[in-house]
Image (cartoon, rainbow, N blue to C red):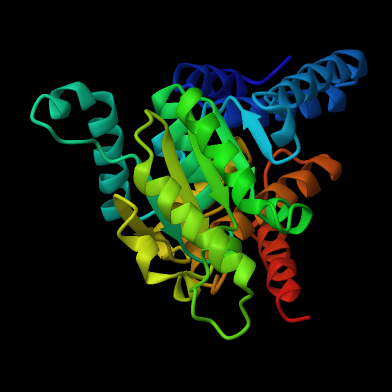
Length: 317
């Protein structure tokens, strides 16, 4: 059966509404049972986990013309899962507080913040932030696939945008425009075509006149190319950076969980440079899988350093 530590971790993740951690520990339990020779039980646990993962994300059916442009998920992630500096966490907490108590603000003729622009390198937590906001507010998360919107509907993108904002007004939720620079690039750029200028102008009009109860988030890796008119259309702008040592330590502790053993994350954090939150989490996951395949219950420092090196090497190609 599962170890006492795994059972305690399962209970903690359940009571904290930490679904991702719950699923991770469940897979660890399955691996433990497999090593004990309980293969049928291990496969049953893995099947339950995979079924849960599959059911949490599906294509949205709110509008037939947008079925391949918007993905819907029911996130359960919470603010403690986001490993960023205290200033950003405070600002996100303020956004959540304003949304939850918007009726108090509206009594004085003011509106709560609900339009957010997030910029930063890939893998630093922009998409995770949208998921956390949705989870904290108990709202569905709708991800608009901006790149598909542009490439598939060139010439009628503005019309699709109008339909998307109609959905935003009709169906309350958190709407994430991922890879937003695909439509938000500065209108005066030399390599820009007239169609994209019209698309950007349409977006500026739609977001400015939006009076819905939905939360709108735009995420970009390239804030420098965004049109300056965009910034004043958003209620708040967050700039994410690669994790500092303190955040790296917390990421490793959270991700390794019971597999951390005697490993001291501080000794590893000093060796990490220019890796994103996503890279570090992936390296930890890879180290856990390596440990499982070798029949071990703990990740060693050498295992983790090897996986981190693999992530470094990806960017050297």
